[in-house]
Structure formats: structure tokens, C-alpha cells
Image 1 (cartoon, rainbow, N blue to C red):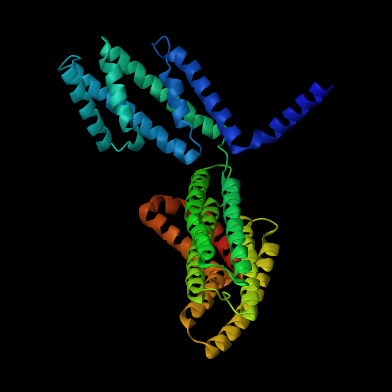
Image 2: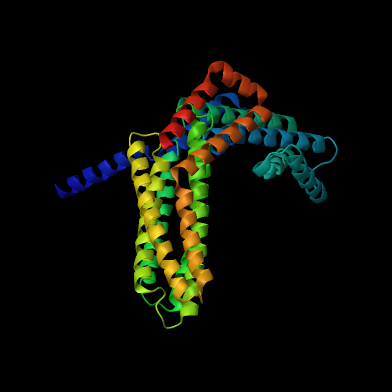
Amino acid sequence: MLDVRKWAMGLGRLLKRRREPVVVQTLRSAAAATVAYVIALRLSPEPAPLTAPLTALLVVQVTFFATLTNGIRRVNSVVAGVLVAIAFSGLVGLTWWSLALLIVASLAVGHLVRVDEYVAEVAISAMLVLGVTTVGFTAWARIVETLIGAVVGTACNLLLPPPVWVDAAGRSIEDLARRVRQLMLRMGEEAAGRIPWQQAAERLHEARRLDHDIVQVDAALRQAEDSLRLNPRVKEGLLHRVVLRTGLDTLEICTVVLRVLARSFTDLAKARGPEDLFPPRVGATVEQLLSEMADAIVSFAVLVTTHLSENAESAEARLTAELHTAAGTRDRLAELLREEIGKDWTNWQLLGAVLTETTRIIDELNTEHRTRRLLEELDRVSRETREKLPRLAWLRERLGVQEELWRNRTGFGERSR
């Protein structure tokens, strides 16, 4: 009975994971490779046409945009390699020096036809074709198998649309915001007391390590951006991409300013020596300000990842209220620092830097600033699209896509204000 219950629980967990992007991608890749192999058995003269499932496996990438571009590049690389092998087979046989020349020529051709990461595939195809006696027969079979794999891989994305990685990117952005929040809270707690400069320097190192987190979030966001391109299941893909990208840019600016703030705390701790980092009233206000800013950071991340959902208005209202509260605390801190500098102006530049850096973070999170940044980015992307792809822009205008985007853009701007 216990084994049946464990089996049922395991099956339940498996069913819950069936919609995860990794699971979906694994099943799609396996299905595409199997179908390609079955079709190649009927159409290819080779007894074991493994090139077809291999091509399908490589072509079915995480996103439809990547699948389309990778399929084109892979077919080009195989055809280029086959043509190079046919040219060499008519001139020389297979020797050590002809193999070296073949590899050099294949890699050069691969760079010329711009197949990017499939440059090595040109040389591999050329070597496989040149290494057999019936070059023409093998060359034709390899081209057929590659085309089968590419067509099946692309068709698989049309019939089974790839997963959209927006949720995963949103979770990574929120996780980054929470890590920033935890660092702010620790810095605020230490600002209210006496800390050695070595401990303040540890917070500076933590702030610097946030750069690595940003790189990981950027990779997740790039994957999400690709999953939105040419995806039939996604509407307003451009708006999604721009909102997430501008949101990450804002968080990156905040982490940079936080790193500068941690450096100011470290320098101030060195200058203070055995004394408290701030006077009691100032330290308590700094702690309160950093706590309020930390909450605003998380609210901003929630707003960025849910701006098109039902919770967008509540997230925006919460962020606005938190920023208003933080601005009031910042103004109170400015008065206390002015009084402190009037008594002792020895470290006035560091105290002023603390006020400047906290103000910069509050301004970056401001909803009006974000709306302006979002609209500017939408204008830039639309302008670049019209310049690079005028026919696509004309088609979008005829289909009404551009008007719908502008309506959504205007609605988002009015709501943010």
C-alpha cells in the first residue's frame, strides 16, 4: 500500500512537471528526431540514415526563432561541405595532405557562407563524403537526410510550438531583486551600529558579486526574447521583450549604484575608525531608508514581470506608495545629514555621497522614469525595424499590428502615470 502511494505521488510530481520548458523541449526533440529517422528510412538510399535525426535534433532548438536560423545555417553548412568534397574528389584522392587541404578549404568556405557555429560541420560533411568511394551517391544521400531533418525540425515547431521562457526569465529577475533586497537590509542593519571597515568591505564584495547574477539573468532574458520571436502562441511579443529588457536594465543600474553605496560605507568605516558608522539618529534613518528601498526593489521586479496581468495595477500602486515613503525618509535623512555636517564637516563628501546614491536608486525606480524609458525603447526598436526590414514594417502596418502595439503602448504609459 505504501509503495502504491509513493508511486502515485511520484506520478503526480511528474505530471506537474510536464509543462515545464525543459520537459517540453526534451519531448519535442525526441519526437522530431524519431520522425526524421522514419522518413529518412524511406527516402534516403543509406541503410542507416542517422544524419536526418541528428539534424532534426540540432535544428529543434529552444525557440522557434533559433530553430529557423539554425536550420538554415545547418543546411547551408552541409551543402557547402558536400560541394567542397565533390570538387576535391575530381582533383585528388584521399591522402594526408589532401585531407589537410580539404579541412582548410572547408573551414574557409564555412566562414564565407556565414554558418556561424556550424563551421566545423562543413569540414565534417566534406570528410565523410570524401572518405567513401561513391562520392556522388553519398553526397546526394547526405543532402537528402539533412533536408529531411531540417524540414521535420521546423515543422515540429509549427505543429508543437516551443515553450515560452518568459516565466523563467521573470523568476530570475525577481530572484535578483530579492538578492539585492537582502544585501540592502544587511547594509542598513550595519549602518545603525559600529562595524569594522573589513565587515563593510565584505558587503562591497557581495555587491560586486551581483554582477555575476546579472549575467545569468541576462542569459535567461535572451532566451526568453528568442522564444517570443516568430512564436505563433505569443501576442505582443515586442512589448514583452522591451518591458523585460528595460526592467533588467533598471535593476542593473540599481546594483551598480548599490555597489558605489557599499564603497561609500567602506570608506566611511575606515575614516570613522572605532566610532559608529553614523550618529544614532542618522544610522536609524539610513536603516529605515534602505529597508524601504529594498521593498521597492522587489515591488519593481514584480511590476516588470506582471505588467500585462491582472495584478499589474496593484503592483504599480504598491511600488508608488513605497517610493513615496522612501522619498520622505530620504528628505528626513538629508536634514539630519545637513545638521551633522554643520557640526563636523570632516567626512562631508562621504555623507553627501550616501544621500546622492540613495536618491539615484529612488529616481531609477520611479514609474514615470520607467514609462519614459519604455516608450523610448519601443520607438527605437520600431524605427530600427522599419530601417532594416521595410517590407516587414509595411506588412505589419497593413495587418494592423503596429496600431495595436501603439494602443498597448499608450495604455501602458497612461497607467504608469
